Amino acid sequence: MKDRILIIGASSDLGRELIEKIKNENTEIIAHFYRKPIEKENGILPLCCDLSDIVEVEKFIGQVLDIGLPNKMVFLAAERVKNIRFKDLNWNDFSLHLHIGLRAYFLILQAILPKLSKDKEKSKKVVFMLSSCVLNMPPLAMSAYVSAKYALLGLMKSLVSEYRNANIQINAISPSMIETSFLEHIDPKIVELNAYNHPLKRNAIPQDIVPWIEMLLSEKSDYLNGVNLPITGGENF
Image 1 (cartoon, one colour):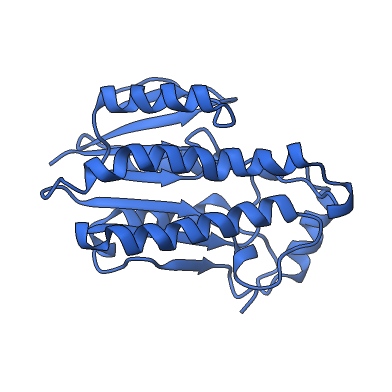
Image 2 (cartoon, helix red, strand yellow; image 1 turned 90 degrees about the vertical axis):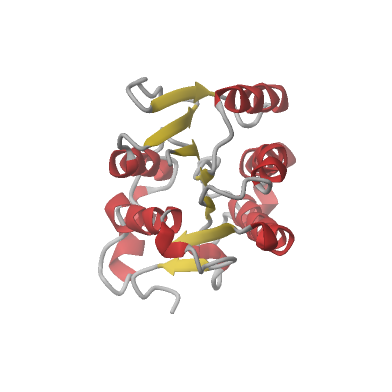
């Protein structure tokens, strides 16, 4: 039976790597993008949406449902991180993280999960991208990003409690710093210092992370539910 996989944040470095790994003749991918376009090809249907705009999100949900109910979903999108001390942070910057990484996810899941729970035949999976910041002491000057990830962790746990009897596996991964364009607003010296202090003397790359998303989308995760996998290379152990 063909899988229909919705990837939110498919144009990110992680999203593109994931698409390359999972695309095949038995998979249809609905690939969300915003700033970086994704080319339409066989089995890949790009859809543009600004996740910070509630009107666009509602339109996007309608487009997804017109294509067909996805039985697997991956949530990768987040507002780009910046190092801003709490005292210098304004509410608009703070709420942008919540709008993209929580409100949009809430609306998408609320539209899809009740319908998906009635499907008794297909494999049903949801995977959230969290962060190692929810595992131990979070980094300095990133309270907006950290708060959004903790809120998403709470949403994940709540959804597991509500939908576990529907045989929907809802899990997350929490990687340490990954060297992607997501870090473009972070001082390169901070990125270098993080690598230097890491037990493996390097930051993660997409190839370290994507196999775990693949696993959580596969039948190998059929007996996992409500798990937040730390993928940190020994950091924050």
